[in-house]
Length: 163
Image (cartoon, rainbow, N blue to C red; front, side, top):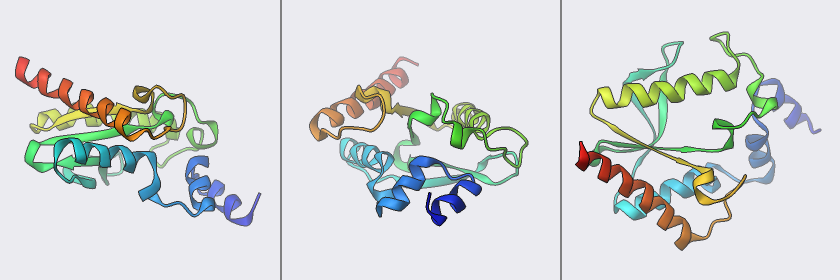
């Protein structure tokens, strides 16, 4: 284990982030960014990345970012990688300032987004890595992946029309 990896582990940085840093990849190369770019393409708009709202806060009072916000549509898109549905021990077991594990905190904050955003007239679409038929990392078949994203966004439009 390199000194950098040791330090990152001490700080509670997950293995996927460590791997990204060690490989020279950046956030712009992440599956999250890839999926949000597909959403931009499908909607013909550019999302505000890592957008924060004054009314959406964590336990410490710090604003919680959302992956993508489309102001024109009052739409938030969240991309859930596997740590949102599976235990990732290296990352999840680290205690947080709130006194709960990182995995539990993630569940609490995901639920907070699902509850609070609609109270402010903002729709939420959650796209999961599993929507793309993969068990871990996306395979990145642009045309197929774009269809998955369009379907998720279309389902949101249908739900709004039905309400």
